[in-house]
Amino acid sequence: MLNIFRHSRKSKNDAGRSRLFGRLPPSWRFSPTPRLIQTAAFTCFLILFLWSSWPFAGDERVNPNIIPRKEFIPTETFLALDPLVPVCASVAARTLVWSLWFAFGVFLASLLIPGGFCAYVCPLGTTIDLFDWLIAKRIKRFRLRSPAEGRWWFGLRYHILLIAIIASVAGVTITGFVAAIPILSRAMTFTVGPIQIGLLQGWYRVPPMNMTHLFSLLPFAFALLVSFLAPRFWCKYVCPTGAAIAVFSLFRISGRKVKESCIECGKCIQTCPFDAINKDFSTRPMRCSFCQICGGACPADAITFTHRWKRDGMRPEWRSADREADISRRGFLVASVVGCAGAGLLHAPSIQGITKSRALIRPPGAVRDERFLDLCVRCGECVRVCPGGVLRPASIHDQGIKGMWTPYADYTWAGCDENCNFCGHACPTGAIRSLPIEEKRCAAMGTAVVRPNLCLPHAGIDNCDICYKECKSTGYKAISYIRVHATSENEEGYLAPEVDPVKCVGCGRCENRCYLTYVAGTGQMKQAAIDIQPGPVEIKIGSKTVELGGEMRLSPPASYKAEMEKRRKAQESTKRVIDVKW
Image (cartoon, rainbow, N blue to C red; front, side):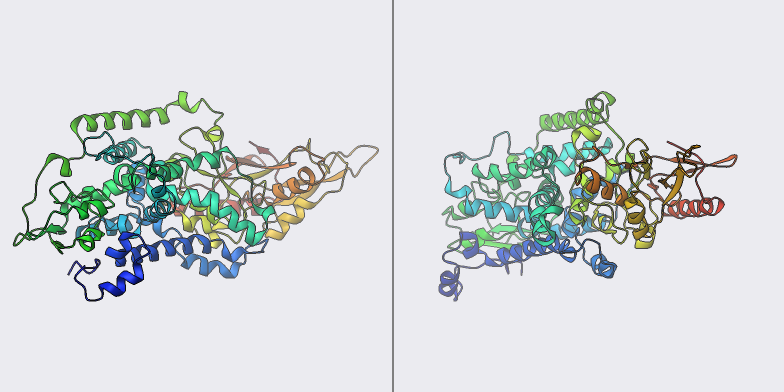
């Protein structure tokens, strides 16, 4: 029953299939069904990736009518399917993330189809296969000529998995650096994503690349370049996601078996893409991905896939140390030390102090920063779905090593649209909560602050009102005009903008418009005259001081309702802010 994925050489349709798949790689000839499933999964991944920006083609503002359609599309499906992402995020943040159900489903499926995620679903594996077929296999200079058994990298992926788990226990999430789907998602975000936005919305909407983007591509480049050493080198020896699935496959109920009719021709070893066959043609079950290519390549039809307890007519299995025990005691101790030391270094103030760490404005609905850094897996999904390019990946100079590649708001290119809540829907771990659009419009990211020394109306130079009009168009109406610089000669003074922090949610539309007009446009100023700042705001109403969160990054959803009610009462108590202290 489990042999449905392979193509037997004894099939009557062998000649027809040979003509159909004759020009394709051997895996297509010997086992076309897995390749078709793999192609369908990769196509689905591309559709979800490209569709996430499609509704914004040519639009300056988000159309609220597409919100239900956007919420229906599960753009983070493949990230949620990577079992290492939710498991490590849950351990690091000491909480249960919603995508744990997907990880449980993947582990459950591996009982019946061990390693099936790697062979059929993983889009990074498909990308590596394409790279090997198009480029790597044509360059033989760097190919490993000796078997990997006994080499130091043979059990490397289990060491990396152990390091990731120990770091998570210590409160640090490093899956964004090593897990398969986050690596691919981040690479696609910073390569294919800008091209798509440029073609659909205009190249002026694409922020320039910087060293942070290029540095974030290094893990993906490494995953491709090691294919010059051996096909799927990353999947076989480096990928910790595959290692996690392999460990769980120890409890499998099915597996690869070799019949007594085996002629020991060695073709199964030559065609196996995962180095899952021993020298005696028995199986390394922790490496077998159930692709069934070996079964299609066997000229004697001596390979079958059935339940693991079948013995009749099967060759005895060789139980050797190198078959399943791919990690030694020394390796376990080294990985444990590396994981603990790495987590300690990332937490150490001295390491964080190497850079000019600063408070960053996180996306609307983000949890508090200490939990945000534990839950965020640096996948780039929120950056990808942000229609205006507001969200950017943090560099090491922004918030240190631990905060690298985490999203923050940069209003240079656009402001946060009041009709957009897509970053919360795309987050696979809950670092950014999926807020209803009504609640998102009240979830403050920060508070705008006017710089009087730069603002032209405050200096009496110009009657500028672009920030006022922009804020009014969003519906927040947090900017009003007051009289300033009244003198005996000029009793009326000048009209200048003032921000009401009760109404302001820090969307950054005012800052963006000021920047585009006077900094990037006329060049009259070196920086925008109005700036979004994170942190709490103290509003003094008579003798009473009310503190409002500049960022409504509160953990329980009920806290949002309490914060919004506090803002409403403060707004009703006064029409004008008397004193603002940062």
